[in-house]
Length: 443
Ligand SMILES: [Zn+2]
Image (cartoon, rainbow, N blue to C red; front, side, top):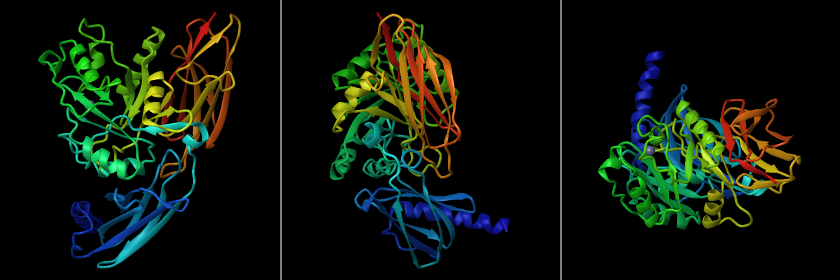
């Protein structure tokens, strides 16, 4: 039994190399074709499809960027579980189908997604994966045009690209996006040997990194200035404590340049390095330095089952119709939360203030905070486990939640001058979200 499984996995793996190339390749012997059609409210939508057999990933496929809602691929004959996703883990759960593939035959799978929850329609929050690579990066494999379908399948509202030291992916990425009416933000991940920052929006330039900056022993001020000359509205510290490129290890050194705007507190799966970034950001906020917390997947490979585009991501509040300019302006103000899934609409004074805003209070007056919360299932069901109000870096209130999908929490407090408040939300599977602060001034 075990032997047979092993043999089949090897065939599956080989066949996936073929099917990744595209449907034009003739059936390899013993394979059949799978055609997935996906709609939401009657319209075709982009999908990510994970095929599993005997608990192992046999392949990851996407609907074509030029044929939205339609994914075709071949698999060796056998029984499979198909996990079909559009906005999975954020707007709705995945749809799971059991199929049997027969050699030389086609299996059709039709998926109509439930409406789910839309943070843009409900609250005005729009999601972007603020760290994403295409195969214009030396270490990545996702074609820049297909990355549009990948990001649409993730349920993102604006496309985003940040390759290492190149804008070579900008043109194919932007042109595929334009055909789909999908707005995009084009960036470059300035990649020195020792430090990384993401600059956007920028023209497709190649950063000229001075040797001292390259080695992590000189001020990056000229590198930041060059990015600004190429249009950068923002410089984002990428993975500030990742051992491969930890810019924040330069904190306190005379060459540390604080003239960046955004800090990744969540890069790929959350780990101790991200936790250190959260703690350092809290320290900055306590010093009155209003950097903005953001999240991005840093995904490189669309066929990688563990680093998934759109997880984590940054949601930004935009009033009225969405434009890239408005989204970026609101990001700069900190009207944002960073999340692996839980969604949070954090407000103060009955909706008069949001993250990034400053609430001005008379002495003795209370701040009244409210957070509306939602979490979608991923492949497995899940709910909300905990919400926390954090004041000046300390948890001041825990709200245990009982696994339901939606909740509203409220909290009133007497702030001291210069206080700030954020909400952290945790799902039953550990996925979490952090808002940016609502600031308080007491007069
Ligand atoms: Zn990096």
